[in-house]
Length: 429
Image 1: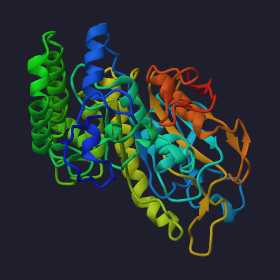
Image 2: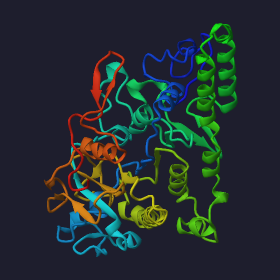
Image 3: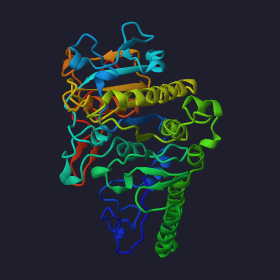
């Protein structure tokens, strides 16, 4: 991520002094700055292949037993109102309100046995794979997008590595690796920094360094200026600006996401934007979709939301396949926890951190399968319990990052693994 700040003593809302960033090489909390990373990559002649992740958070906690793990033989107080339907994969069933996905089950996998989830409403788990208390003393665990930004930087297209519509902490990596957040058709740094202010900060930086640059006979300062300018250009990357403008999309593609025409809806906008941003060079895109905290009227809500989710996710998966992006782009759809097996008196389901499900597609994974099973009433993992960090190990693997060996250094100078000695899910990779 890119942070260029002036020498004044005033602070941003994250409490970081602007003076701390006056020198491009002085990022003590987060290692290389973006401009340094670009310079190092150019010197080494290295460019990363463009692997990417689209991380979709169903905020509130989607009910696993009403979507992916239906229990038609359970007692009535557990099984719910929906029926399972067959998919194009023999023996694989999903909810009747997702018929489009049922026709392409060979293109996705579902994990039904994720355990030890958070019991609170937060997307921290789905950003990091860790509890919020982990490594708090040094700033906390960074989001996957921030880790990718630190390790891989932008693609040669110049797009920012991490764009998020639902936050995501850079943790101990420091604010330079925060996500960018699009606003309308503009791309902005999270916080108050706009592209105009960013450019003025870069100009100020060059001005303050003028004497040193004038005295430098090696030409290194001129080279560094060029990379700094390239880093500034990331914010207003033309390809990203184009990606954010849905008016430039094929009307047939818009229609597949339910956008345009008489029945036009905005529900599919972020799904399509995510594909366009990844195509423009972004490595990680995250967003929230829908409201899934169904303590009451669970089935009324799902009858409205599941068909929309079905349309949007199936459109995204098909879109990636048609563009030949399915081997490189991983899609994951999940929430913070599952929901209670027993239906409550309000016809709802409450929080249930004991087990939950996740949908995965693309990434070159082995799809067309259900991984793990739960007990008769979907309350606990029966076999193949899977931890959040195993899912993240898989995401890192799909991005070309080895979760077993890759380390980052925290502000205390200690090496930190990306996950705690977890391997990618063997059934998927």
